[in-house]
Image 1 (spheres, chains in turn brown, cyan):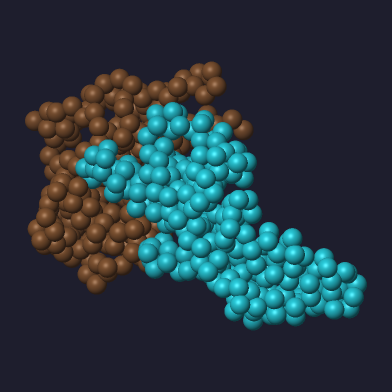
Image 2: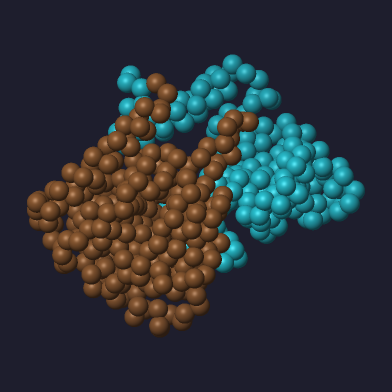
Amino acid sequence: MSKLLIENVSRTFAGVRGGQPVKALMPIDLAVAANDFITILGPSGCGKSTLLRIVAGLEAPSEGRVLLDGKAVNRPGPDRGMVFQSYTLFPWLTVAENIAFGLRERGMVEKERDGIVASYVDLVGLTGFENHWPKQLSGGMQQRTAIARALANDPEILLLDEPFGALDNQTRGLMQELLLGIWERRKKTVLFVTHDIEEAIFMASRVIVMTARPGRIKSDVAVDLPHPRHYTLKTSPEFSALKARLTEDIRVEAMRTAQAQPA
Amino acid sequence: MRPLHPVPPGIRTVLGISFFVLFVAFWAWITLGGHVNRIFLADPLSMLRDGWRLLVEDRFWLDILITIWRVFGGFLLASVVAVPLGIAMGAWKPVEAFLEPFVSFARYLPASAFIPLLILWAGIGELEKLLVIFVGSVFQIILIIAVKVGSTRRDLVEAAYTLGSTNNGIVSRVIMPANAPEIAETLRLVLGWAWTYVIVAELIGSSSGIGYMIINSQSRLATGQIIFGIIIIGLIGLLSDFAFKAFNRWLFPWSLA
């Protein structure tokens, strides 16, 4: 059985000021196997974030449904951890308190929390920063904390919405390796949204390419590159071949988006 | 001068102080120089002399203490009612829809116009003074806090939901801490306004306090005392503002840049 099932999910936004309703997502079907790392690649505005938010339960689909372990999703919950593109650490909590947030909401006692928090602080390499406020951290460190905060809850699936989109190129590369390293060791089901082709291939065991708005699935590409992956993989011939193919796919869509915009 | 260009801190202090000096110098010039009638405006020196006499002989410090107590008492009363209401209005939209129109209307009712009514209800004792400040502050606090709470960062709320927060958890562990510094800032602002209400309350039907001293001095043409009273109010306001600011900084270290 699939871990996550997206069945015929579509989303239409009501028209602004009596205008035409906007179709953001065409009906989408997607089955995600347990412990798969899936990246959703698409041009900006294609509805990929909307799809992720529907899985998270932060938005309702206009039609269709999402099943996690056979149970229908209709509201956000701790079984679906989420990392956002914007920095969403709670500014009034320290790094350790941020990571402990979900455990605290669950009513876990402090003693029990501390051990778990310490292990995730270690996992994302933030030892020594436990008592820093988010404001004192760089963007990369904030996102590492956000990943640890989502993972500490031990969710069934991890949802990431362009989590490294606001980071500079070098930091982004390091973060990709860090997240992939965690996935290789701990095995989680991951849904990762990005518009970066290299990132999509490097992270994924399977890349879902979406069309321009209204988004649908254009192609579904398995990435059979070996693990553990090292950043040098990005210059290998196999990687380049995949990149060439996806670049062509996404280019057509990006051009369609550009043409659809009024001048 | 280049627009928006910052001024060095040293020069900033000098400029700030020099206006005070100019102001007092101008005051001294028109009064001591005989350009205005002494009856209507005392000079700085007699203001200080009158002030000293007030403090030493007339036990004016008792009036100061009474006024401070009234400000803080009325303000505390208003805060205790307004902060929870403001949070509730900001967090739960039906509560806002229910109360917002009335509070917006009540905000424009001038506190000073309530004084005759409040005297009828509560007499001319302490309760009436507290109520004037209460009426003047409570609606302002409610509205400002409701707006701040209503604009809580949505992404933080969403993040908390994906971490398993319940609706009540969102209010108590996201909305409240996220807005606590803004709420404290609002209280600091409104405390400043409370100082104006207390004087108005003391000008009418009162037998103690700084405002009473001022109205009492008017009938004796003691303009030196009036000015001294006004300056005392300004100084206490400034001091309590500084203390409030420092307290907020100590309370919310995370909100500092």
